[in-house]
Length: 83
Ligand SMILES: O=C(O)c1ccccc1N[C@@H]1O[C@H](COP(=O)(O)O)[C@@H](O)[C@H]1O
Image (cartoon, rainbow, N blue to C red; front, top):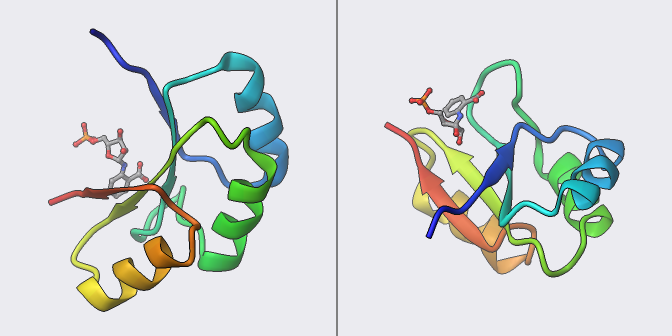
């Protein structure tokens, strides 16, 4: 079954729009680039999202301890290791 992820959320306002689209997943990018967010931004996005939409964190060459800390804080529900 096809699943849809909308990624690149950067603000709580983005999350409010995403809720209406009802994707299977939403994604935030912690890797450097134009979509990059920090933990505080990601926490606000998580809080603004519908709880039924899992938030995926995209990481590139990030120390596992940092990824685990973000996941264990409940900011993201899934980890995407990119590259
Ligand atoms: O989109 C980004 O800014 C980004 C930056 C660094 C790593 C991953 C990024 N996005 C994620 O990668 C996929 C797209 O991958 P590809 O371009 O097809 O290789 C996208 O779905 C985001 O999850």
